[in-house]
Length: 269
Image 1 (cartoon, helix red, strand yellow):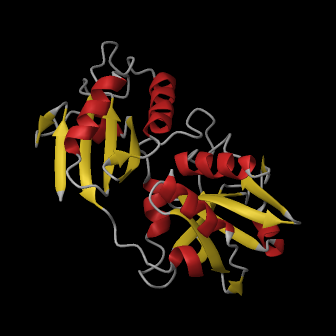
Image 2 (cartoon, rainbow, N blue to C red):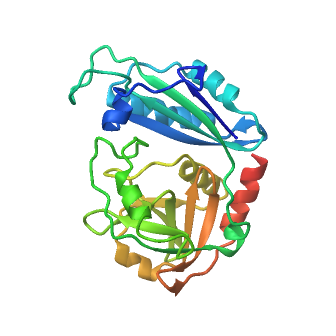
Image 3 (cartoon, rainbow, N blue to C red):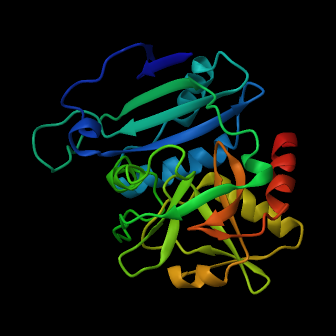
């Protein structure tokens, strides 16, 4: 199943001069659909609107985007990818002053995740590719994903389930497509994302859920070497919810039941 709308038109095409294609000048959101309803859509829109403001895009028509997303959904469980580019423009990096953004809304089948990942945990290793630091883009889900593409190319399917990425100083930031929570010295910690990384919607949900049950989660820089003392790791993203890590670079970790508890709450939310 795949339904694509471009600027509200079904199966429309993208102009070759679109700045999203030419320069990666845009943003995207990956949205889980459960029971025919886009999950945490308002939070996705908050991040999208913040990114649009920081990139200097015109104000968004969120009501129109909401309708287009709903029009794309034909199955009760699906994935919607929303892409927003600056639109067409003349050759060169300078953005047009009268930008007319391009909206792409596409719905896909739900991916075939391992049924045991959430309960038994996943195998994670380290990526050699590093994340560049840039405060102007930190936290945003922008279209420039080449660092993650190169990192994901480092292992073959089946070798491991995910890879952790560091910045140029050796601070762990996230997995290639998931945020990270680390249990150290009896406390949950998540990496700070003020210089790079994506501030995930499920990261926000996990932190809020944990806080409501009295589990405060600290946010601070985490050196990769600190993970040698970690007892548990959790990965989160919009589609997987939360996955515990059973193995990091060959070292066995405890599979914390907090991931299953969070996923059970998520299923009822």
